[in-house]
Length: 336
Image (cartoon, rainbow, N blue to C red; front, side, top):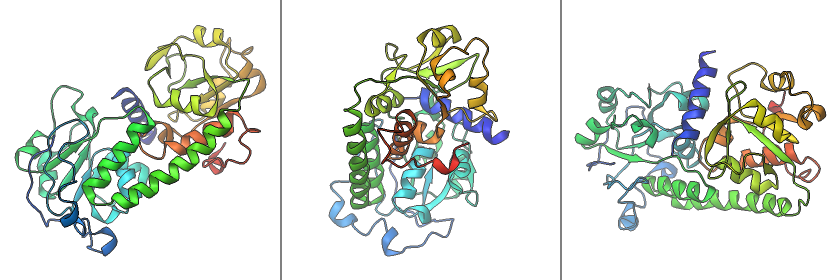
C-alpha cells in the first residue's frame, strides 16, 4: 500500500509540474563507482570543454567539474536516463521513487521534496540532477548544497517529446555520453516514425478518455500534455482535447462524451479496470459496453524521458490492435 500511494503521488506531481553552483573536481565516490573506460565521464572532457552546458534546463548558470565520478539523481526521469547512458556505477544516491522504480535500493535514498542536504553533502557528489517540482513550494531545498559548491542541475518536467530529447541531450552532455545519447534518440525516433505513419492512416479515430485518477475525482489531460501528444500520434481523439493541461472532470462530463476507449494509469487501487467497468451510471458508455477499458503503465506516460515511446506503443496497440498488429506492446507480459 505504501508503494502504491508513493506511486500515485509521484505520477500526479510529475504530471502537474512543469541552479547550479561552481564545483571543483571531487573524487568522493561513496558507492565505490569504478573508472571503467565505458563510464569514464572525463575521457572526452578535453575535446568537449567548450561544448559542455553552462546552463541547466531551467536557465540557471552551472559550472560542471572537470570530472564527474559521483552523481546524485533526485528525479526518476533523470535517473532512468542516466541508467540508459550507462551511468549506474556513477550513482551514489537517488530519490526514493528512483530506488523503488529501478531497483536501486542499495543506494542511499532521499526525499526529493525535503532532501537531507547535510547527508547529501557527506556523499561529496560532483553533480546532482533535480526537477523543478522540488522547488514548487517557493523555496530551493538544494540551496545549501549550491552554497558549498555542489553542481546542481535542474530539469523541469517537459511536456513534449521534442523537449524530452533536449533534456536527454543535456544530461548526456553533463556526463560525457553524447554519442550514446544520439544512438538512443535515433532508435526512439525510428520507432516513433513507424507508429506515426500508421496513425496517419486512421480515418475513423476512436475517442478516448484517459484517467490519471479514478472516480469520483477523475483527473485527465488536455492540450499541452504528453498524453495529448501520444493520442495524436497513434491517431486517437482525446474527448477532452478542448481543455488545456491537466484537469479535473466530473463523471457526468465523461459519460456524456461517451468514449470508445478508456485508458487508465491508476496504480494505487487493486483493480482500476474493474473499478471503471463497475461504475454506476456508466453501463451504456461505449467503452464499457465493448469492454475497451485498459490499464497503461504509469511510468511510461508520466516520466519525461525517452521511455515515453513505450507508453506510445502500448496506447497504440490497446486502442487499435488491428492497425498496430505488428507493433509489440512492451508491457504485454504485465497485462491483467
